[in-house]
Amino acid sequence: MRGSFVLALACTTGVLLGVANGAASPQQAPRLSGKVGPEFTIELRDAQGNRVTKLDPGTYVVEVEDLSDFHSFHLRGPGVDERTDVTFTGTVEWTVTFRDGRYTYACDPHPSLSGEFTVGNPVAPAPPAGDKAITAKTRVVVTAGPSDRITFRTAAGKAVAAMKVGTYALTVRDRSRAHNVHVRAPGYNRRTTVGFVGTQRWRMRLARPGTLRFLCDPHASLGMRGSVRIVR
Image (cartoon, rainbow, N blue to C red; front, top):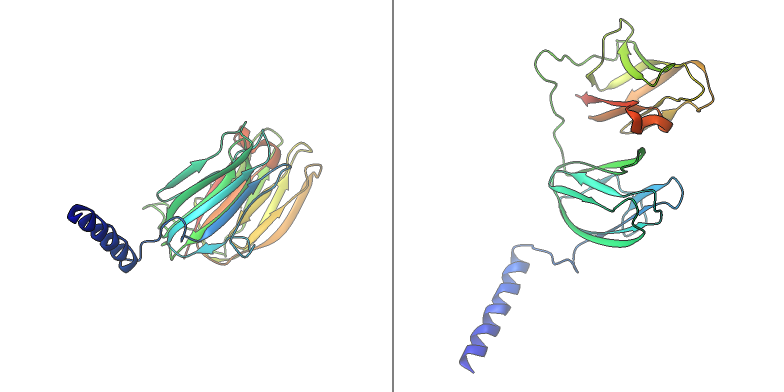
């Protein structure tokens, strides 16, 4: 009898300590809902149905509906790497702990099918020594085709690795009807159509640090993609 009392007291104490320390059980954790398919769509929403763009650090329960046997849902970032198999269809549930940083969710076979969000207040990585970030005074050119290649360079022909926050004049050269140019960054998302061939000039505002991604949507999985750091 005494042993049972001691065990019950220990369990009660453990629960109280957990509450005192702010630990949330999976039942108490905020819930997020992810979905991929059945067509070329992917999303991650909060309990109110809003698309997730920023979260507080902590433990969350993520319920994912995978509605296609040719897509996957891959969630990754600092301390998190969860995915569904490409051939899997159904619902899975993950309990994850997010910390300050940037997270992405994407379909592995179709990388252009993706989204991203920030947790807490991540610090943008500084460009490596000798890898100077360009400023908004620099004209930038992104070129897709005519071969299976896409580049992101200054007007002088130098590959861009890092850019400072600002508003840029971007020249877009689409050289093949089989390709397109898709540029996305935090707060910016624009593309040419696959059948288009020609040159366009875009005003590109990079409002906050993060990652700029450039790709050809139909051929990103073949290597027609790249990224550039955005820094203060």
